[in-house]
Image (cartoon, rainbow, N blue to C red; front, top):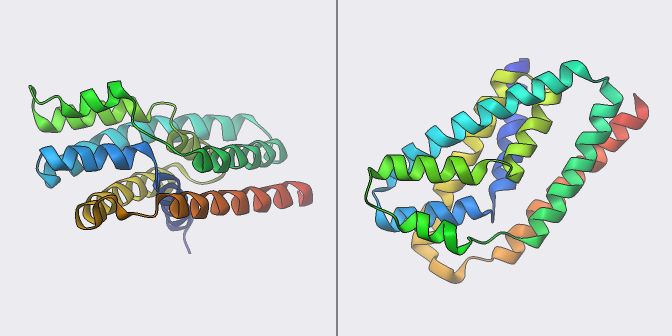
Length: 193
């Protein structure tokens, strides 16, 4: 398997999981009740592609500057933090709810700007930085971007069909367990390096 494909698959899987139960999914669903789904997904894609391009740039720079063992330990600790963050859960602040309701500008730009601002410093941005320290830039960027957009699209589709009956707690616990598993894997790799 090529390194780009491998980086794509790993990044897609982890960002998709990280996005489950995240406030971005709530924002996507909120926007999709007001604007056409295609416009919402286009805005999410544009914002995500930009945030994750910055993230992989930072991750690649860190990966080149630091030795392998410390990177693996830092990445493992980061994924433990992501797991705990996921268990805590996410909700939209009143300010984010208000931004989601704004409709005076083009829907695409409203969605893109709100998502861009919401993702700065979010766990998916930090996870993308972490993944980029170990994997290729292009595969990580594509995988993380597609993983986030697919997770948000899934939230829109499932949310519209199931409404408030989604098992949010079970989704959060499952995602957190996957983060813990990845952290353990990285700790084992660091110990054997």
